[in-house]
Image (tube, rainbow, N blue to C red; front, side, top):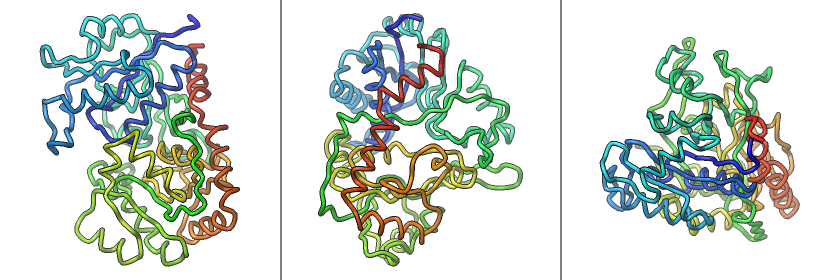
Length: 390
């Protein structure tokens, strides 16, 4: 293999122009580029993007194109991207259609980040295709339940990589269906996410969705939930059991959800202003937080996939201690100082109390975990090594 690889990363940064999605791709791009590789971000499918200014999915790609261009420019890759509606003549921005075809045919690796791109003929010309599963368990459950479409999607790739870092462990119940997974984790660019210690920071916070009911999976007579509200309900009493204040920047509430959170003492705000400003308000919100408390999907918790949140990695890099549900990640990451894996509300309250008793030490430990275990170039190098590309 050449020392300088040509790597194409497929994603959904423009179609879903939120900060969490944006940083998922940007951190990978920065890590791969830091190794000296020739890196490109391509968004090339038939999916209409969401335009938050119009609050609708639309074939008007202007917002998506602006977002991708600005994001790529912000990490020094302003000429290494394309956004194309593949079923529309002339709907290609950034690189030309001819340049896209040339990249697919000449790249050393095509990484389908999140698995969100349905590969077409152009992309199938890539000689080495990697499915990078950033949200594990659902696809595996669907295949185990007989979903042939998901199995066919897997088959279009040469290697499957997953954030399910506990896959194959004795305590992991995820059905792997005979597949072999390369195990990886989310990278974090430490330069773009600097230490931000604030001794008087007020709230433990998080950002995300409360309720998303559309992706539950039934397997062997048991329903495994996608929506996080099932897990939030297990921790509703946390503000009542702690002197710490908690703020949730969440959306996706059904009738009565917000009122229950308010009644239990949670401070709830809208995530949209910060989620649409990845480099500004989103980073400032995390930098101004005391730490993160959050939950995981039921699927990851019960089956102990080992998944860990990209957003939590951003908190750690910013020197913000993280308290989160254990998905099995405690088997591969250090916990108990800067990062706490909890199973119930009592453990969560105790973890927050421990953090506040020696706040600076836990902030420094959080940053140290990010530097040792999530640093972008190191994570990218390990993945490329596991893929046999270096």
